[in-house]
Image (cartoon, rainbow, N blue to C red):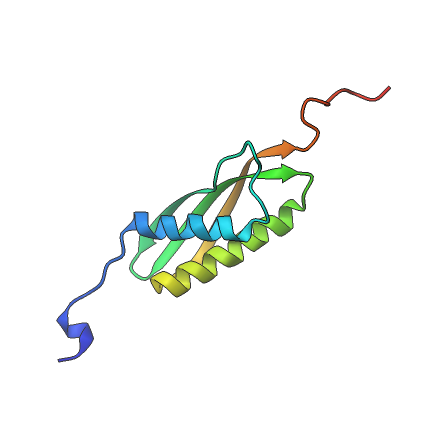
Length: 108
């Protein structure tokens, strides 16, 4: 009897979301000291997962490069660990944390 005839494996959406969150954290060079870890949500249909990642970054940083790294790592890890295709990874930057702290005054 072929493996496909014996049954099916289903990976829960929350498991795929945890894989994606961990992958997003791996991709970031660092998470802001006062910031929170990346949060994810997923929509799984058959063998594909659409992923939404919300994250916080240090400022200044190359926002585009950071988001690109997150997209690549999430795609790679979900594909490798869950065996799913990832046609979309939407990254939303929720907050930027400045190294300047309270020194936000305007120069005169």
